[in-house]
Image 1 (cartoon, helix red, strand yellow):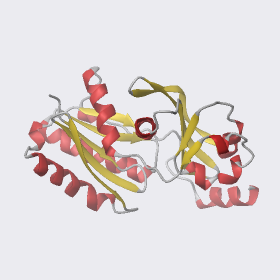
Image 2 (cartoon, helix red, strand yellow):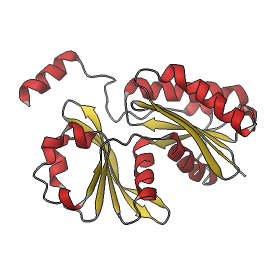
Image 3 (cartoon, one colour):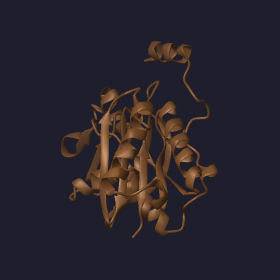
Image 4 (cartoon, one colour):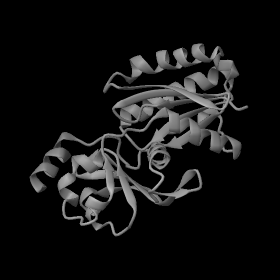
Length: 236
């Protein structure tokens, strides 16, 4: 049986999970700017609970983004540090896919899962996923889009998830399907689903050497300047 350790720090939530003996145990806490203090103790607690060591882990999955730049660097750095210590392979997993999978597991009646995470300056990290069996598949490329594009949705039987749905609520108030479809803006990516998706990737032979672990920002620049944010406010 495969043992997967998972780390997720891309948003305000910090979490770690361990897939062991075909079950997932996990630690999760919403704690902005506390990830560097929390993540390693979480990992240590999970390993102790399972009575195993890092050397027993087959691969380490991590939320590769998109998400907060600092959070992605934390996840990547911690993953590489742990993996290099035991020559353990790594598994980059989309944070948006993890959120879509969580919703698919909890809402069996929904077909489409529209993930929109606040990317600031009136933009969102966007991912459209569709149910496929017990998992989800990406319908269109993950990207950064203007928040007002949320109002252009013409799908049926969809579910919205992520902070972008609340941060830019005014952008889709005219969306006549909103009342018929559920929106969950309070959901953050969880390492539990990073572990589950990581396991699928591991079984498909997609594990990478630790030195190849890289975050996915979806933006060319690493941060938005104060001037950009001020211009966005004036143009809003």
